[in-house]
Every structure is written in C-alpha cells, then in structure tokens.
Amino acid sequence: MAALRRTLRVPPLLARARTSAGFLVTSCLADRYLWDRLHAQPRRGSVPTFDWFFGYEEIQGLLLPLLQEGHATCPLRVLDVGCGTSGLCTGLYTQSPHPVDVLGVDFSPVAIAHMNSLLKGGQGQISLSPGHPASRLQFRKANVQKLGPVTPSGSFQLLLDKGTWDAVARGGLPGAHQMLLECLRVLSPQGTLIQFSDEDPDVRLPCLEQTCRGCTVTVQELGPFGGITYFAYLVKSTH
Ligand SMILES: C[S@@+](CC[C@H](N)C(=O)[O-])C[C@H]1O[C@@H](n2cnc3c(N)ncnc32)[C@H](O)[C@@H]1O
Image 1 (tube, rainbow, N blue to C red):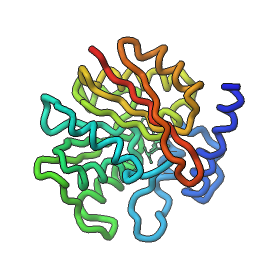
Image 2 (image 1 turned 180 degrees about the horizontal axis):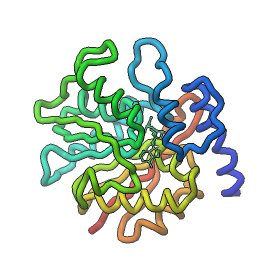
Image 3 (image 1 turned 90 degrees about the horizontal axis):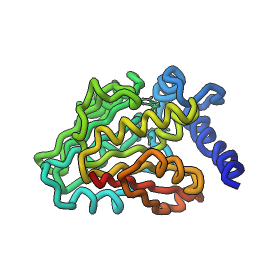
C-alpha cells in the first residue's frame, strides 16, 4: 500500500512544476539545471514569489508558536533549505512579531539572485521591511547535502524544508538521507526541523525515524489546500 501511495503522490508535484513552468518536466527534480529553468520562468501577475504546495499564510499558525518558545538565542535563527523563490522566508521576515534571523539557501543561483533582488526592492517591489526591528534575512547559494561552507554545526533553532526532500529524493534516497544528516548537523540542541510534504506518513515516517535517532518525530496533517492534504513532519532534537 505504501508503494502504491507513493506512486500516486508523484503527479501533483510534477503537475505543479508543469503549471508553474509551462513546460513538461521530464528531467529529474534533483537536477540543478532543471531548477534554474523553473526558477527563471515568469511569475503570474504582480506576485514576485512562487510557492510549492502552499504559502506562508497557510502555516504561520504552526510556525509562530515555535518562534515564541523560550530560546537562549535571540533573534531565533531559522534556515529554509531549498528555499527556491518561495514567500516563506520573506513572510517570516516581514510578518513575524518575534525577532528572527532567517537564511534561505538553494543550489539554484537563479533562485538566489531573484530573492536577493526582491529583498533589495527589485522585481518592481518596494524593499522588504522586518516585522521586528531585530529581524534579519539573507539568501545564499548552497547545496543542502553539503552545508558546511555556509553554516557551522548546531547553529539553527528552526529548519524548514518545504518540498525539498521530495525533490532531492527523486535523485535517489541516499541523496535525501545525506540531506537529512546535514539538516540534523546544523540543527541546534532542542531545535526543530519541519518537513512540509504531500508524502504519506506511512512512507515518510520510517525514513525519518531510521535516520533521526535521538530525536522525536511527529506528524501533523495540514489543509486540505486546493483539495490536497499535506503533512508537517516535525523532528525535534533531544540532544
Ligand atoms: C519543490 S521546490 C520547493 C521550493 C520552495 N521550498 C517552495 O516551497 O516553494 C525544491 C527546491 O529545492 C531546491 N533544491 C533541490 N535540490 C537541492 C540541493 N541539493 N541543494 C539545494 N537546493 C536544492 C530547488 O532549486 C528548489 O528550489
């Protein structure tokens, strides 16, 4: 049943890629050049970002309480792995009433250039203002399987992955496993990693539980958004 569900879950991801890009995705979603082409596609209307699955507004109710929790580090450090051109980092930066230091990383230089331009007021938009005066936002090019050049171990209290595991796993589970190990390495003690996905718990949970030893793994159902039910997989470090 798990294998069947996994197969059935493939079309929505590809369908969204087709819709966003206007061309049929035949290449592997782990391929950087495919992503460069997808991220270079014109956006609809005046919205300068493009979100997979759903946007910041749909999950702010889940995120904001986590930003409020008593953390020694202020502002709270947040890493979005495979940020693409999503409005998640910008939403946190501009709307969180709690101070946040947000870093978005992606291996696509096209996505990073787009987000840096947006931050400075490009794309015909006004430059972004923080929701809290101490909040910060930056975007950097990085491979989520090798985060050493951009961040040391244990440096983020909150890690967000919206659709990136799903993309990396198309290149094979060893690559996704390597990405998960990197996420756990840069997560601070007591920190939380959240994977947002449309993949069923009976497929995702065994992968997470096998790799995330010494962590608690829980799942929350989200939506439905646009008729699709999603999941938030919360991996909390107990070190
Ligand atoms: C499904 S999209 C999700 C984008 C964004 N998180 C969102 O919610 O809209 C997957 C993202 O992961 C990025 N990506 C895929 N493999 C990567 C890797 N090995 N290192 C860094 N980014 C990667 C792609 O460029 C793309 O932006």
